[in-house]
Length: 133
Image (cartoon, rainbow, N blue to C red; front, side, top):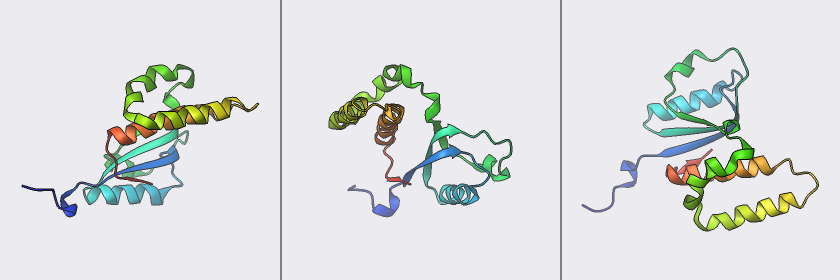
């Protein structure tokens, strides 16, 4: 049978955004919808849930799975990261190094982002995403 041709491999794209959905980001929504129409699987990682009351009507067409990182309570990181931890392989050393550097600073405000980033990286690997945007 052989390897599948490049044109037969399903493209999987992860989008990282600050907040989703946003009325002001018409371009991003249209781009994702077009990718989906072309058969691309899209996964969205959003740091925050939208606090806007109005949304694009086209949002109802969206098939993409959306992960909201702020749903992951940083104080309980071991609960939600533990199942993903092994997926990270030797990348775990880099995560510990980043955390060590951050914790040695007087301002530790970025630790939440490091935990969220580790979880998102594991999801990217687990979902076998081929591109990140």
